[in-house]
Image (tube, rainbow, N blue to C red; front, side, top):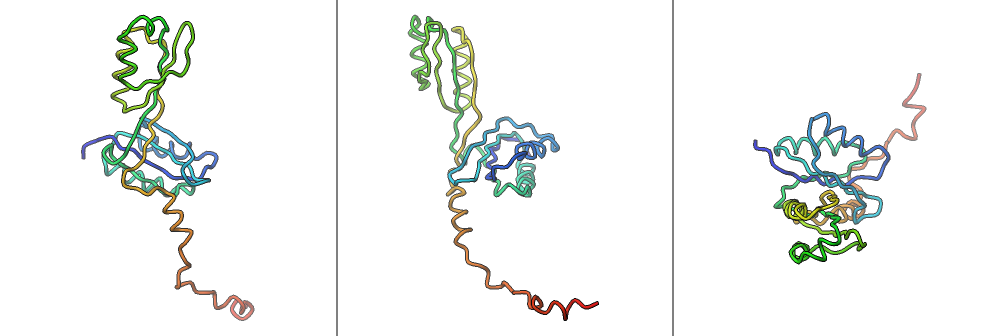
Length: 196
């Protein structure tokens, strides 16, 4: 099987040491994490991990099953780029004189939808969001004009064909007890059953 980029989405409880256990699973399998983001989800008390890896589908499927065995992991999904809506965010620090004197740089920033975050006499900080290729292209262009500093955030993603974890939690909470529950018929006969 051919390797490709997958985005793994984990819904978890927010517990101490979980990120270490999750990264340990990747390390033992010698899988490099390209991007890792964690944040609260739409359901209170449930956190969402978004992890990007480059691997084949069979390995990713097994990895997700192993991740779900962790006591704090509720659900693990994996998707290709076509199955999600995703963005990465970036911040750029550019010399102020370059932006004010070069019309091309201002046009370039506008073309990529960059918005101003901080304006100082010596530099201006811009932010933008987009796919990795767009951010790479803008970074490459700004390097020609003395880019001072650059930082990219981890991928954030939403699965296109998913109702999210909220729907699954509601289904779980509304589920009635199974009709096959059997009370322990020997509970009140302890002395008769356990004799020595």
